[in-house]
Image (cartoon, rainbow, N blue to C red; front, side, top):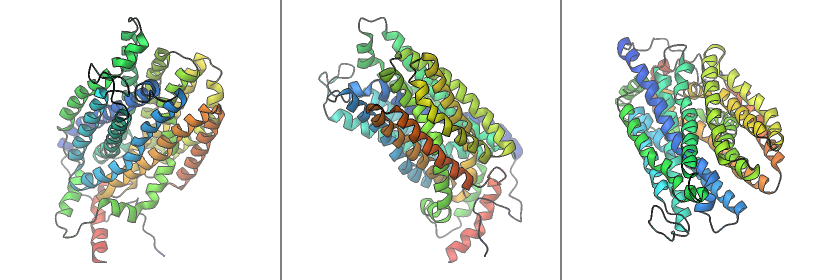
Length: 476
């Protein structure tokens, strides 16, 4: 019995030729647009995570005891991960129908507006810049959750579109290298967000009550300043042309009298790839968001390290995992995506079991090493992911399929583990956190085994090859 392999394309006729000069000229713009877009989106995302660890328990959940306030704060952090699949479906629909570029402009705008609004929100019992001097009570956390939902909604559509820009423009044999540019966005963003909070921590240190100044207004400034970054990102992103692969799909779609929703097509034809991608990348997300957000809280609240020290170590860590992203992405062009991602998942199993015993020694050196190694292992898997997921899906629903797989991993690895970890740490069982992370990494190893190597797939040819299959589908 013949089975169709949806992730491999071998057309009899070559893909249409494109002009080489426009493509070469646009590569630098594509790299810049994808990288700065993810940098801005994740900067907005990370300043929320940093604030959730250091500020929000005091500002938005002031009526709760410290342990409950911390758990509630991380619960609002998790809201975005459940909003991300919604964003992947909505923006995937438009990205697969009206284009990658126009959709990415909207994701950037929505993220920027939601982030600035968070910076202006009054707290539970404190005002904002002289407004609502007595706070707004229960409306404060409600509005915070709403803003967080829109952050996640925007990020759900951002990543897939940014990676498609680079993957669909990449020269043959260099998709991993091109795909690393949007993947570097989180590294830049984590360094920028940690540095911004560190700067305002030092700026407030000269005041009589530095902690009070930071909680009253210092934390708000990074959120409001993101408006300037969004303006720069829009300027660069609007200058990018639509990808050649989407133009091919768009021309074909204009001749069709019947269209299916990309979401339904992705679920119908490649549901296995969505599930495998979600499971394979769950370890990646758990390491990243534990390292960037949870350990910020754990280092200050449980281990007693200063806020400045923890933020500074985060900045150094961002450089290290950025280097790991570059090396692994380029390496994946040589040996394949599957082997590199699998190596990260295998390393994560023993490391996560060791992580909290190392951290609980209380040594600043141990905290730095624990944070850095966690982020480096994450970076090894994250580098090839920017090319691997677009390669796994057919062009007509690639935006939707890649977004669904990526954001499913976000729920499994980024939303649930920090919530469970906060409860385990609150009950004094930090080693249980390591066991949870090790089990999750073990599941990722199994999913990587089930993956097909995608680095040799011709995604440009796939846009042509799908026309016959779509016609047959419409007839039946």
